[in-house]
Length: 317
Length: 306
Image (cartoon, rainbow over all chains, first blue to last red; front, side, top):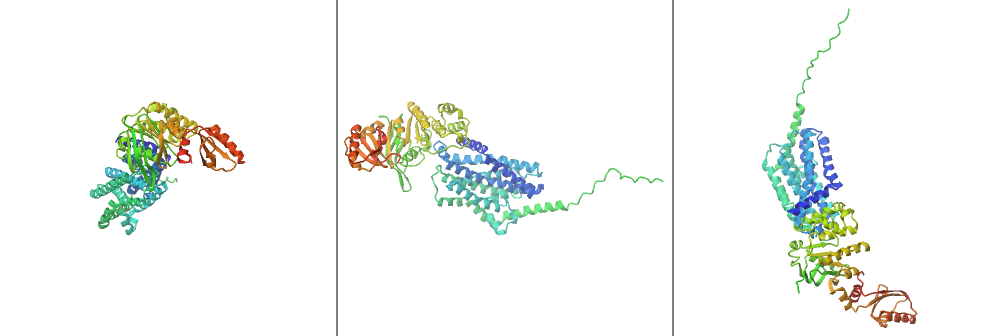
């Protein structure tokens, strides 16, 4: 356990000394936040609250990208093999990556929530405990996906290609960038097989739907992400390689597909009962209704002035 | 006779169809500096990495400090130290941080401050790893290898790629470890390194130990012959040169002729006379005192760095 915390500390220190970390983990997420809140949300508090879920979702999902690249770089440079000859284990190395990633991602998320509340005047950030749970499970599970990617790719180039292949459907189909309700019905059903869809949906519901209409729905999302995390972590320990020249066979790359099992099952269940699709529609309808009601509110009559109108000057005869 | 600290018997390591280590056997006693000498690709690193617990052997026996590296690698890593051939630390890790980090992995460890001083890295304590020179990186690797005060230290090509000045600095450090009676296993393809540092050497080629003993024993076993390397204006038969007076053996190697001689003066006179009769002439002549290079040439017909 001691090794794990020492390595986590090292990983955090190294990230904080890296300019790329500041750009990709702090500057970019904040740029996205302002883009969503000020441009897409037109600084309207209720809309900003609705868009907060997708913005936080993007942050959480991004975990796998940096984590896989860092681990592959460590392996390619022969850094991992230096640790291999010490008492550090595979699990120490993998978990420290996830813990460090969590510690580094959380401050940006807190800043975004703070800005939503105080710069864009979002009236309520919803059920903050559920938001925290989703963010925590989300970061560790997507981080763990990054570990699997690092384990099944042999070079940095391969890692970046696989990251791109996974990243694009995750951001475009989950409702993190394109509103879920504007996707075609067929695409919505494909999106039901993606973990990102449940993460973004869960975050949206936790923020705008308080008290939650269905606490069971949140529990299902959390349970699925947790099972996914355990599965991906187990696979990454099995496929972990310390040595840069230890290549992995093509068949092993199919293990990435195995990590999809929990969401294939959840997707099939959702496709049958259609809960997420219905809830997404309800949420957006509520938002539209609130906006409409806001517009239809009768305008306040002008306040009566206390000063009497200036009397015309009497004509002099 | 005390039990050796390292015992290796018929060790075999394969990478796919390639058999990198083919039945290597040797043992190392406590306090001994043992060298694996051989050309690149001979199987030295594979052998040492099996002993460090980094790779699993395909067959054979390896025992290090009473542990089987294939089965007890976790326990073994607490009692060994290693400076690997191709390794690095994160660029943005500071020297002192690296020492403290590795020190904290062990229950008992040396004082990082002392090691920093001993390895001449005091001025670089706050430098990032990326800011160190090649020699400083190698010294840091050695310091980290010793951080847990290991029973056995593995040094894989500790001076490969370093300039002569830095190489001598590393030699001085290893000689200091030798004086401290540390058990050291080092791999090298430098003759000078093996002769200067090792109590015993195993010459390894194509995955097999072809000879082992102290450098002196090996040289004596090969006849302790002086090596004369000549280049001639016209090609000669190596068999003719081998029959010259004072010449024990002759091999053509990369355009030169390598003559192993028990009586060098007579051999040179006989060579010059022979060349006169053949209307041939000497382009160059170099005389070398007997070394492990000669042992290697005699055993394999090749130079170490071919």
